[in-house]
Image (cartoon, rainbow, N blue to C red; front, side, top):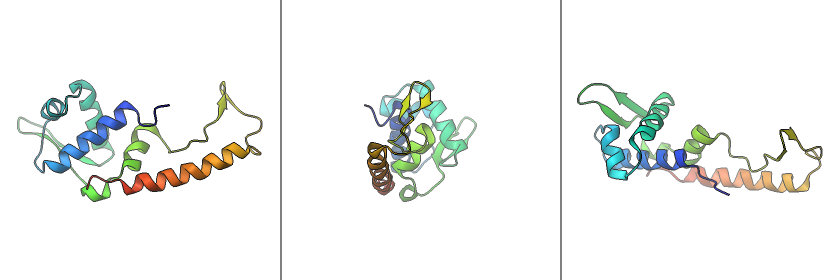
Length: 127
């Protein structure tokens, strides 16, 4: 099971890079430095800009820079942007919910783990 998907991983790497380099950086420079695919990274950075975590400046000297203090950007926040809510209880059989969803003791235990996991991921920030 992969918990952190590729886009989330790349997004967090790019955000850490931007936190370390206080200046505006274009996607190509970030992609080269981190050895990430440029096209995918551009899309990721655009999503982060739409979400308000980075600021995008157009033009020859344009690029991306953090729009939020590094200590205020958490791994949980980035996961939610790219993967949705942190929930280990998404038990589906085919495309319909399990008929035991309300009484399932496994689901209840996993819900507690999901809450604790989210709390811990909130503690992981860029700084």
